[in-house]
Each structure stands twice: as structure tokens, then as C-alpha cells.
Image (cartoon, rainbow, N blue to C red; front, side, top):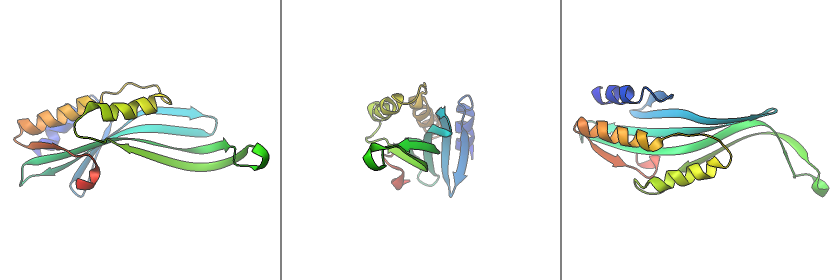
Length: 148
């Protein structure tokens, strides 16, 4: 598919990986990691694209996702004692509105309190939109991936 080849070529300088499942293409990049004793967390950017050849359109959505596992300590015991535990936690934050840069920036501000990173997700969205239009496709930004 020419469009996907163009997208992969345009984004090859960004460390990430492409996956395709049931005609849904995803570009995923780990943008930050935090490690501590027996604990590891990572922040991942995900851009998903559904390409409709008949309608000549590309539906696009993006999100930041935090996941991690390891030993943690929390105040769940009696009398405020610390209780160690093993856990796995995943949190996802979808962009909340249209093409507005602020929504994913707000997510970044939230995660920026925990992680030190610089990642230009706006570049990815703009690149996908430009390549889609160059190939004669309409670009549609989706708020959530449910519509993909």
C-alpha cells in the first residue's frame, strides 16, 4: 500500500514501531521510562490509523499510555503501616477534542510531573495528515479509537 509506505518512510527518523491488525495501523513509541528498585514504568505514545481505500479517507487517533509493574509500597495496612505488594497498573488518556493541540499537551503536562521527556506528537499528526492529502485521501481526526 503506497500510503502506508509513504507514512513509514516519513516517520522513519522517529524511534517507534508499526503494527497492523485487521486493517488498523498503529505507530507506537516509548517516549519515557522510569526505573527504581524492583519497579519499572513507561510512557508510550500511540497513533492509530484506519485507511478506507474506497472512501479515500484516513481516520486518525492518538493517545498517551502509562504502564508499569513491580513492587510498590502503600499505606494500605493497619495503623498506617506500609504494606509491600506486587502489582501491574495501566492508565490511558485519550485526546479529548478535535485537533486542538492543548488536549494532548495537557496529558503531557500531567505525565511531565512524573517523566522527563521531549516528544513532538504534533509532528506525527501533521505528517500523517500531509501524506494522506498528498495521496488524495481525506484526513479525519477521531477523538477516540472507537470510531476506527
